[in-house]
Length: 452
Ligand code: GLU
Image 1 (cartoon, rainbow, N blue to C red):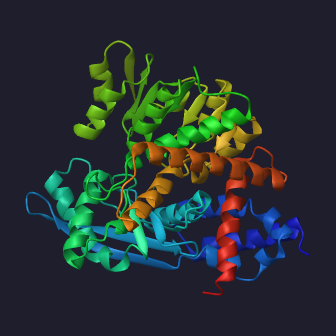
Image 2: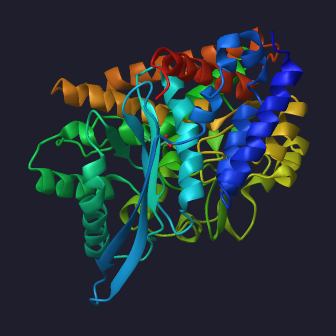
Image 3: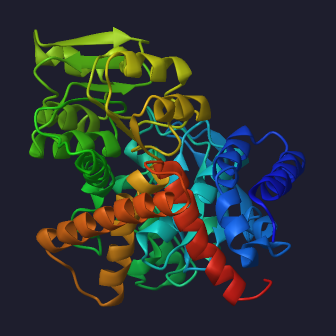
């Protein structure tokens, strides 16, 4: 029988090895630390998980593809970007996870996202493995025609690695409905197949699911509501700070309003907006989704209630709830201290790994309910899996049906994380609960399927 401390030492050795084997991938190291550091109790309690090689296999992607993506801009100049697809784990189903187009993308970033995705997807209970991909392409300031040519070039390599039973990409930062459309078109042209289930996040009328655009933001608010319910509170009348202004942030703000809370901020890389009256969603959607503009335009057009703070930290705005919905490591220890000082009750991650490990530690120590992304933002990928189910059955469900399923899934994830944390002596610790519950599902499938 291995003790928890022996297990912890073995995991520490493995983490050192991961750092050596995967140099210059700090985000992947961070994600691996965050998961492995919480697994000692379950590995010590269930000896089958201590089987040599199990965790080593879990931290090594099944396949990693890196490829050249050449494309021409509107002036005819050639650009060369790098494309990635990391197929991390398929023990529970086809690889599933988004594509990110952002200049910060590199192999380490995609591996961190793919690693998180394994556990997130397991938590949905919907039979999807973990993967992620993307490119260091920057869509900002690019015309539709340039984005189309880039997507076509990207898919000209990617198509051979994906398929409805193999690997099913979707959107992430920089990849929304427009990009999925161009990617799907090129896949269809190359393969000569109407294979709707090869990509999710498709448009209405050609295989997309209702509520998929809303799902990540809606799901995160539902998760935050479930955490508050556990403490005898609800969202009614609460003030919320939301970071970001993309798809996740927009539908987070929408669902908060529907449940009686008031989101007073949004942000992008230029700074943040604070709006005392609450964010006007129609205006924000117009600027971000139609005009593809920046958030300072929101403050300019909104009038007296809103102001734009260039380069500031959105976390300085006092609130009851914080929903980081922009990107990794956007909420650090100082931000956590500010939130705590201002009396924050719950922090729920709409983005992937937005809170640094130090911030998470501080928030949990202060008794703030903390929802980790792999649980709290799983609504997006969950509805992607529902889109796959609809595609497979060649049918489409009503918005009410999808939203009902989403609500059920988010409540179920909350209960699973909560109960798992209690079972492993960490009551109220959703990080431990999410990691262990996701791990158990993947590890059981890996053990059953042999050393592959
Ligand atoms: N990119 C989203 C995520 O981080 C969604 C992935 C998907 O729908 O496959 O979970």
